[in-house]
Image (cartoon, rainbow, N blue to C red; front, side, top):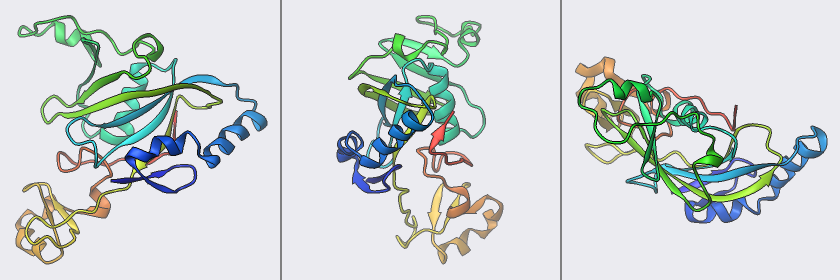
Length: 235
């Protein structure tokens, strides 16, 4: 699946995007202006690749993250940009350790076994290193499993904690009944539907939504109702 560079708007395959990001003239010009015009000093950042653990080709992100940002910052970003629907629990798994959004809540559960979870207040520079992979889970009922890979550590005059560098192009969906281009999604049946086949599902009318209005470019598609905002730069 191809994606788009947020700076030059050119399209590349996921496998080629990192090479492009590291040499993109438009991106270099943007960060150069930050340094020259706004006096933003260079800071250490991690370039991360983010993708669903069990299907990395359809949805993916490349982001630049301040090394002094916390796991909680990443958690909030992933929720706001890609995943949030109902305030579900989440956690990171890094080198055998669990970093939980609510670590003390688990300790009160009678069925809890294993190492005690840690909080997400750890800075990235203290828990991850270059070339490392680590896991993130959102919603322990209908879980979305993500994998994050630390691709590079470098200096950038970055103004925000997290900057989106590139993202996959929103996939085209096809009707589950006839394979025509889908226009709707039925949350009751969990099916994509075209203009013709949706007529057979009108008894679920309140659970049917136009794709343009209800389906986001997110790995949570088809799991729960999602409304997401799209921002290039994220505080």
